[in-house]
Image (tube, rainbow, N blue to C red):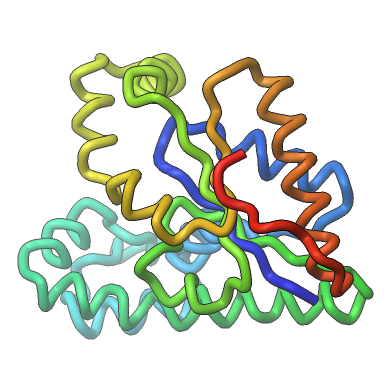
Length: 211
């Protein structure tokens, strides 16, 4: 069984590609959702974060994470960001691997990891192939602003803070350029999925790259 990572910058259309994979029966682990789940009350990760960044990052009554306070402390220094990653990433990887094992036992030829942040993290090493979805900069800005109800300027700030597109595409096994309609993207994603399934079956699946 092969593992494919599906990633891309905000507003690129990554969720559309992932939805197509799900529709065709490919098991998908949502790394972004997992990263939120491990910060819910009761998670052992919270105890470790509290030890490192202070017990007051948790609400005294509910144990809920005070996310803004954690972010202020974790991102104040490079060491803080490193500590945050060292605490959270192992649990994310553990859950992704558990989902992959379940997919393997179910007989799936392919398993997908959907994540906005895969390249440059421990998740990248879990992937045999990487699908990167791209879109024109201003198109992404418009989508982010509309989706999140924010100004275009704020959308640009969010986008500019993310991993540069050229860094993502340099690592891509397949690059899906989302420059057309939603249906066009689905068709292109379907062709990529066919190639990935061929690779998983041990057939010659093509060279990939830009589609």
